[in-house]
Length: 311
Ligand code: ATP
Image 1: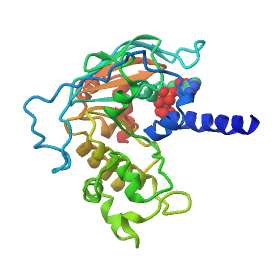
Image 2: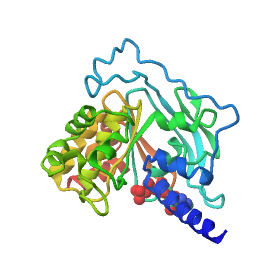
Image 3: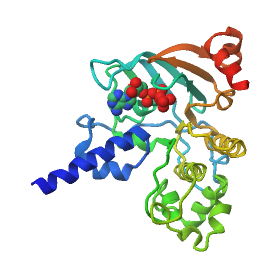
Image 4: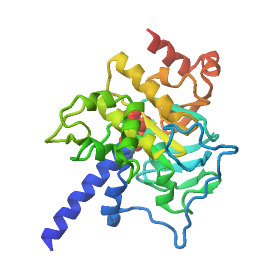
């Protein structure tokens, strides 16, 4: 009994760490089904996503890949949330991401930015208000369908102790080598992989090839390109990449975000300039909102953050 108990407890710790780092390891969730804090409501149906009007997938991110041309808007409607009932974290959060647009969230550490992303991926249920994808409350549809509709590029990508190919193809089980290479090229990691002696067969992880933070993010971008979901969450790395690398990753993220409904948790304001709307958070509330130009004109917190980053 003890022997059974200890590993489950250990898995619970891993699960919580994964939730914290927002990694989309559906496989891990399947393993840890017992640890789930939220469950599908009886009879829950999959999320229904509308087709993009007039879309024949001519503009698919990876030409040749046939994916469902669905799209979805995202709504946070008066959302309240606390991890611990005694300590409210999000209060009365409302915003809308129209299908194909980007909303960026900025604000000090601990203000609740990543929590928004965790709620959208339905790691937790809201305590007040509603989160809707394409008009459907995410508590009423299957979790699997919500997670299928969302791609996450987390701050720290967890890689499996397996080949580079496996790690990229994880975004779309059953993807061919050609598709994996296409995704790797679009994420600008192909060159790096192809010069290793075993190429896509190279093992990564603890006992294999060690990847830098930027390289890992590129693997996550390649995964997401293969998955080609209608909704994206980017949790921008706080760790400093060198500026050339940072600009390159930003360009690749923009490719991945093309036509996607995107929530960006931004640590560098240069990422958010083109967003449809920028939300400035503080202590769990939205304290300022608008476009980059509007917020600069307002001349308050965002403008102060912008001026500070320009120095
Ligand atoms: P950062 O920019 O540092 O990533 P953030 O704005 O994304 O910060 P969150 O990670 O959303 O902030 O955290 C918001 C608050 O919720 C913080 O006070 C944090 O301590 C708390 N918090 C986060 N995860 C948990 C958890 N699993 N259990 C309890 N409290 C948590």
